[in-house]
Every structure is written in C-alpha cells, then in structure tokens.
Image 1: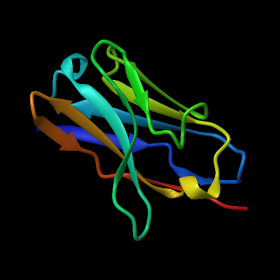
Image 2: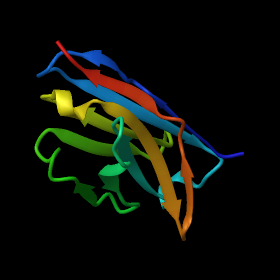
Image 3: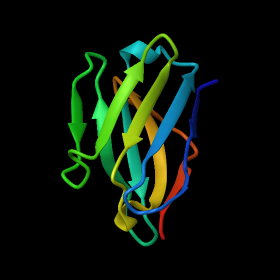
Length: 115
C-alpha cells in the first residue's frame, strides 16, 4: 500500500519559515520524481517545486529564492523549506510522487500565513 504522509504545516506570520516533510512508503522512492503542489481556496492546484531522482530541481516563479526542495532517499522523505513566507503562500500543500506515469498524492497539510 502506497502512502505519502505530509507534516509540518501550520500558522506562521509573514516573513516566517516552515519546513514541510513528506514521508513515502510502498514505492521505490529513489526512482520517483517528487513534487510539492499547493491549492488555495478557489484556485487550481499548482506546482510549487519538484526534484528528480537525479536531484535536479524546478520551482514556480513565485517561490524561487524563498523555497528549497530536497530529498533524503535513505529516509524516503522529501522536504520543502519555506522562508520569507507571504500571505499569498496560504494553501493546502500536497506531496506527489511520479514514476513512469504512475502517480500518488498525499492527503495535504495546511499552511496559513497571517499576522
């Protein structure tokens, strides 16, 4: 059974930081592209950042320079370090795995940026 379990969300003030984690099981983690997506109320889900099995990264323009995606294959975990958070970063953040067109999603974790 495949599971992607996100953690680390919460309420933070503008300018603050959070670190999201996504622990995977049931997949060969090191062979998967891993991504973080987010969905704000009334908006479509969008890609935030992705990291390939070869550790190449890609970011949405809106988070470049503020967010960093990383992975630890030994722990089957992908991380999203989020710095200088803005109110517009408020959303549910989802983890996704992808390999050979087979994809799985986590249940999401809420991030709220507000003073």
